[in-house]
Amino acid sequence: MALNEVFLASGDDWHLSGLSFADIRPNYFDVLCTDIKNVTQTELDQLKKEGKEFYIGALSKGGKPWLLEPLKELQPKSHAVLQEHASDYMVGFHWYSSRGPFEQDKDSLSISSFFVVHERVISIRPPINTYEDEHLLEEFHCKKSLLALPDVLARSWLWRAGGWAIHSSLPGSVMINRQLIGYPSGQWQSIGKLLRSFNREWEKKYLKVVQQQIPDAVVTHLNPHDGSSSEWHSLRCFLDTRPEGLNGPYGDQFLVVDEHTDQVVYHIHNGDIKNLRILNNPGEAIDAYCAHTLLRIPGRFDFMPWSEPINSR
Image (cartoon, rainbow, N blue to C red; front, top):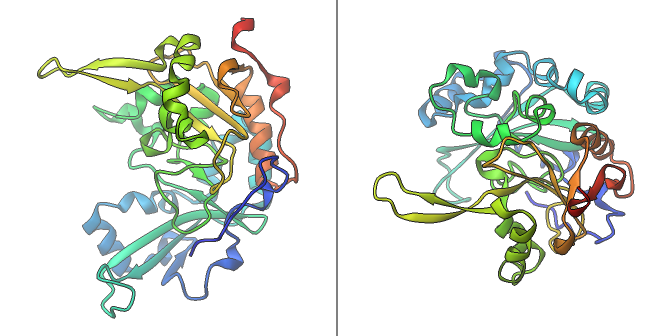
């Protein structure tokens, strides 16, 4: 269930991205729930078997109101848009055969969780453990990365959700995240992967240019067991405004150094790697951008009033 999406580099048609709810083929979902009471025992048993009970966590806690509550004070424009225009929170279950599309015995379960906003599916991946509950955990593997993100973003978009995205298909890849804020686990692109998405040769050509401006973009990690060293791309992209299907040095990308807790947001504008920028007041800027994107307002959002060259500081 994928759409063939081709977009202009200018961003003039990016509001047309994503999957329309009407494009989902009839009877694709075997069960579509907006209430925990509607999840049948068959799906509950399979979720337990696969260790994916977290997919119904938001339903069990109240759905839309519970998910949106953290946005109310910290991302008020986006909250207002979702409050008015988002459907109920939905979790859809699609059974299929792991042995092929023509097999009758359906033994595997695909799960999609989303809102519908202005007729477009907005995917919301539930986390295995929420950031809100991290204090209850002895080890929360995403905590370090979330501490690198400005609190206003980490404690709103990612407080109870495991990443927001606009996908061109269902359920969408957990490793691809475009147009909305992704989660550190899987959805934050390394600077190397991001450069390769601009041009296959750009990692080799420009990674050193990035390091000249942000020295900790790449760091060395030591294995505690044998002392061996490995490189880690600490500069990671949590928001890429390009729609799925569009690669090249276009749009705006926002990154943090996951080794730091200074919560500085770095900005790449139109692939200008030689002149990296810093996003000021990222909470306000990204709130305005997300509201613009969710409303499907034509034209590319302008981040430049909040952005300044890194060398101007």
